[in-house]
Amino acid sequence: MKYLWFVTATFLVAGAVAAETYGPYNAKVLRVIDGDTVQVEVAVWPGLHQVTKLRLAGVNTPEKRGRNVSDCEKRAGLAASAFTRRFLEDAQVVTVSGIRHGKYAGRMLGSLQVDGKSLEQALIDAGHARPYQGGRRQPWCQP
Image (tube, rainbow, N blue to C red; front, side, top):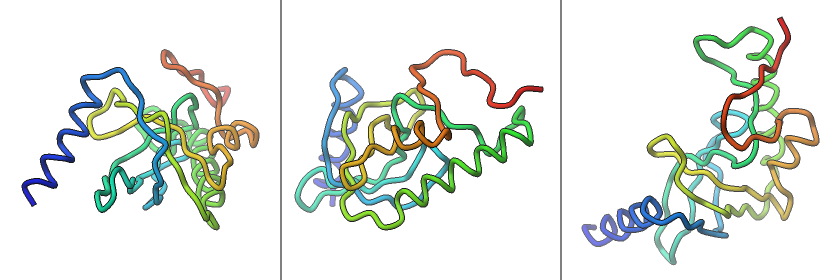
């Protein structure tokens, strides 16, 4: 058990130190947190799986909760989350790639493909996400 912890910790620390990205890895989505964040179990090595939150890189969806989130944005956030759940519903093969550390502890950034289709692009195409490369986010609803 100590060895498994060491391998897992080494994998995570190596990612924090290096500016490299990792993947593709086979994954299983455990739950949808919101439109652009899921909890995944990633097969990083035979017999070694890592559970982590994965924030989709390059996109932003509306928030469904928060201190300064309008009712309009909450509704849009719930719709984005529902879209992500439907997109994942009958998935046969889920892969994550381009994995790197995000700015929040315990959350990784990366891309998620479902049966060869990009979840990020599907969210954008359906109007549930916008391209996002960091910085100030634009409001989802006009006052």
